[in-house]
Length: 353
Image 1: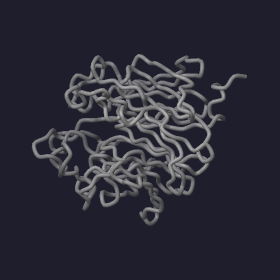
Image 2: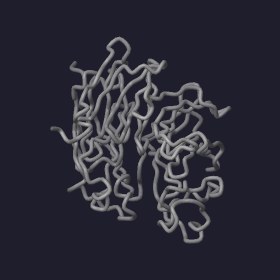
Image 3: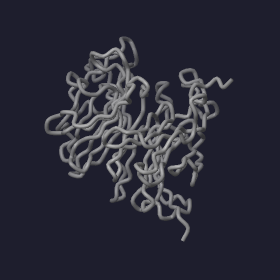
Image 4: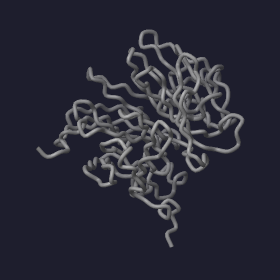
């Protein structure tokens, strides 16, 4: 009998409503692979695959110029605390449709997120060590765990953004996503403090924030066409609720109220304690990544599921240079940090002339 619960539940394409699903292809990077990125169509068929010499440093995306942006794990990054080996990146590549690397930037302290901007710059997150005095000024976290890191202390008030009480004091505020806004400012999602902020590009100050009364260890805050924010809200240690569930929320920036929300009809069956993403598609549907379980699905504005796919490839961290976390994650996993969907027009190189 199949011993993996995920395997018993079924892998690959799990269902499709051909009349309501958006057309296109879904891009995913298998986190415990040596460096696999694949593009699948709405029937769950793999239509293109890349294999790189660096395991995924979280995710990949296709840029407007048709190139693949891939964030791989830096082979020579310092070995800090154990979970650093799980979410670090540092090799930021652009690859043309023919498979040629056209640009590469390396930063051994990079982690989680990267965005290749149209002006050639890269927006990404890095880690910097705090002094003992700075670290001691940050409240919260698990007592006697490691001191936090991050230069964010220059612009964040630690009293307003304390480490959540169940979180180790090894990474504050743990920025797990950054997103360039239309006005030039930056959305950032702070996991270890459960907050979403807007950073001014002119002053570096925090000019707006959403706190842990709304979100709980959330990921991937992105800006929608009307200026509202789409957030994958993981739900880990959510205030005043004992049952854990994940959801996707759309928040009005002016009122900070939730104006749209997706939960599973049986809420506790949709939950990933870490990672995850949501992408609003051109037809109004939303692509959602239940990351820890490699599950990607699409829902309509009314919350109807119209497509579901589960990554069928499993592997563990053995042989990937991440010995520190083999004990934490000592099982074959199909996890996907973040998936993106693209229209056929976004990938013209995929189609024969």
